[in-house]
Length: 327
Image (cartoon, rainbow, N blue to C red; front, top):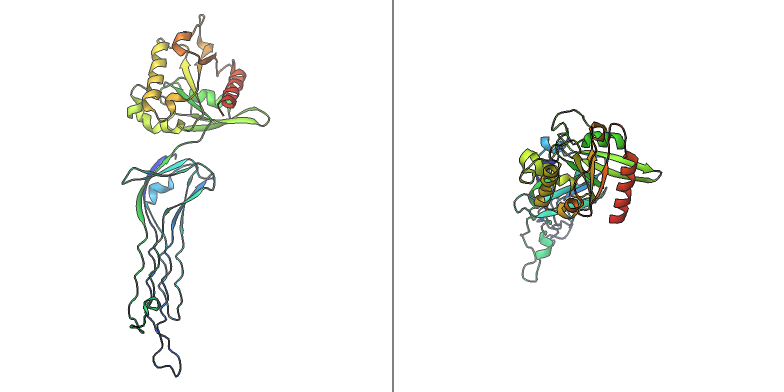
């Protein structure tokens, strides 16, 4: 099951308390203070892993706590530091403070780690409080509490090309033809209910990752049709492939709907480079002109058929060239 959103609570370990102790030496009836410091509490460490692809585990486990530091001991022995709690998330996970809404970390690299909640400092033992006027102090410090936070985890897929289109525009079919991905394909709207990734090989040592998101409808940027949940998965892409059904009865309206949703959603989607492909050329019975150059301005276009394979090789090459120009 693909889960791309989760809320969790994390609590770093508290610092250990300082110790009140005195030396007990033979023939020394009144030894000085020897209470050790408490150990530091463990941290909450979040690590990105390329081997994890969903936030599913966080649906069943909402709380993560690190070990507290050990209390100080006699003979000036410092308590043991508490063990860290390692929380693994998929690469591409954005970590947000649920209370303030502030982004705390963006886990975009494999093995990237961040201390999201620091363990508390250990308290000082009574040794630290000895003075000329107090040779046998009976005071110590309590350990500092570890940080605790409510977090939101949002997974945003990392891909080079984002496939954008209306429901049933042929996005899943195209992804299945140009990559090894095998998304569900059917002739009804919203067949795709979760984002899909596919590695597209152009030639030896030339490949890129394409992301197919569920179809967009008018109002997607406001959350209609779960649009905002899907659109965030193409925020990291370098290039958008706008897919239009060549057999649509209102091609211009479809185009304006998609562009308006991208521009209204923002977060960088409005300024990403775009290529337009007209799909399902195999179903055309008459000639095809496409949108006017004035409408699409300087955007490159291509007529394809994922069923017959028409212009698919040209499309992969075009995408590779555009990606190379945008880096």
